[in-house]
Length: 323
Image (cartoon, rainbow, N blue to C red):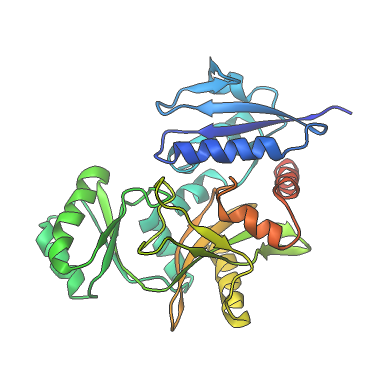
């Protein structure tokens, strides 16, 4: 029986390059060798393609693949660029399509869709370099709507890249200016104190149209205000099963499914939440979850008696069936 040829795309042009290398390596290691022939497709930090360590073109790298798994995080891997290349090449691929993936990556545009779907999110205001306001005026406008502390975020970066925690209104103008200068736009969000949680979903899994995995409670290092997976000094434990009540777990599952549908994502996703004393709030939904061993997704799979190999085979089946 011929093996299925699976191209695993990893690396990429975003700041999440090292994490994508880990996810791609985990994917290749998890696919059974007796059933799959994996091809390591690397996109380097300059956007150049490589096949099995040798320079290549996208056309050559994608040729003769039966299916592709996009293990890229952020940048061209999530903004729709790679998805469009795969679609034009005719290669089936696991994960979301170009438009929906790009929408989920863009925090400002995604918020508009998620809020219209009546999904609770922290209060926020966004600005771009086109705004004819000083950063002081921007800070005053935000303060009139909600008080500190704040999180100032770039519009389309993942894994906490570029985020500033701002404890007071006096610090806000400089933080806004820094993010605007570097990224061209800034989302200023109220900082909510609570438990940070990730919930993964999988389509057409275990006889459910959108199956919600059990929530992973992110236990951050003492003194940390938010989780930064880029930091070598910061590590977090993902507790699954978590201590949350049945009601909270149901709310988290419902919101993760609702966000996945609202953004029109495909096959799988994961959503990040903060659980406060009064309410559950969605922070963001990711079209390309991390699958490396330090990530939450494999822990959630293990908690239901599944595994990364089983999940990947399921995702490959969805891709090849065009679901």
